[in-house]
Length: 254
Length: 254
Image (cartoon, rainbow over all chains, first blue to last red; front, side, top):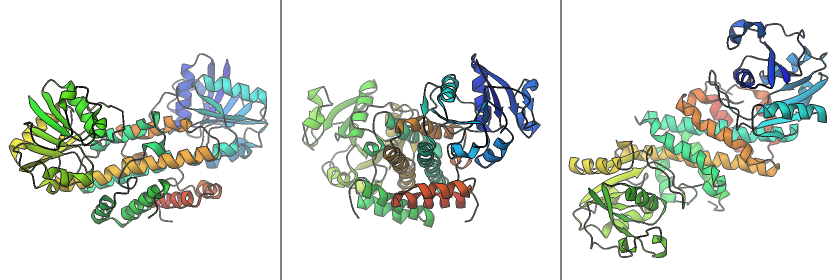
């Protein structure tokens, strides 16, 4: 049995709380948040605390809070003897070096407000400063997911940048697609099967193999036509930039 | 019963052929391709032809060929009385104006070599020059998909551009993610659940609502750190360009 205290009330905290509640080998001893209203997702009110203090003893303290707050909040827990982890992809282990036993428990996923998702396939990227703590985090991770991987702070930084490209920037591509549809009275949902299949292709192909489109096949006529049609200056810039990038990537110079 | 002739041997032709084979209300009377080897997917050899002529009579001729070839190949069929459609998102109806009864039958999806996918949810975007032909295409489309929509050539052009953003450019984001992982010995498959969830979010949120990440929340510290870490000049440019675009989109000027 592993006991945990969750610090935070955001999407990650809520998802971790619900996932741990389902595990028979993990007990959530407390959920700490500044704002009692934001703690409403914890039905058992005895678990709630609005004090960032250390009255409870648990095996692992989990700071599921915004990147900026991690260092400051960790200061409150610098005297505890338990393992204390944060859940951020972008924040190094050194950000919580003030605590006695720092670690990382980073679920590599995008969490949405009020949407509880399954952790089964979510990679849990862990880091610790000794083997005992590493084993605890592996054990904790395996309660949630089939995929627990040790990733050090340097690798995690890079992984986080890769995640920005495939998640944040991809979503921005969806935004442009949605804007173009809205401008021309086209139902954006027509594009959803395409969006899903674009992601699904990666089950059998590398992204390099999966690349298609006018830039890849150097179809100048279509590229030219598209640039004639796109009126928005920013969309034109982006179209040109990415088409050139794809051409270059696939070995064809302009 | 609708009878069709498919002209072409690529991914779209193969997928249409297999889907029509399953329909009891569609008969494929012939599949025409230049190269006999590329016609190997047609098991009934009696259906195969390498002649672009008009010996067979069918209700609908479907040109599932590359955009560049559409105009030229259509010339071969200019004397037939049947409906003749192409399957291209980027090509206007006027490209086949030499035929008597031109139309469009555009399945809005990305097709992969040797991968047969279900048409059930794939939007079939149709266009015709009269009501009779429109009805035929609706009937044909409904044999394959639950989603048959009339889209004229002007709208289809825009839809195709939107598709380039959400499919081709998104896949390029995956490529960069994959490159970053490869460079730092990180398993790219760790990002796949994130990629799938990024697409799945669109079932409940608009892309504008779904946007997350350092650029969206104007987290200068993380943006700065990321740019310090990214060594590749092209990746830096792209990171900067897209982060600025997201900031601007979400109302925050630099």
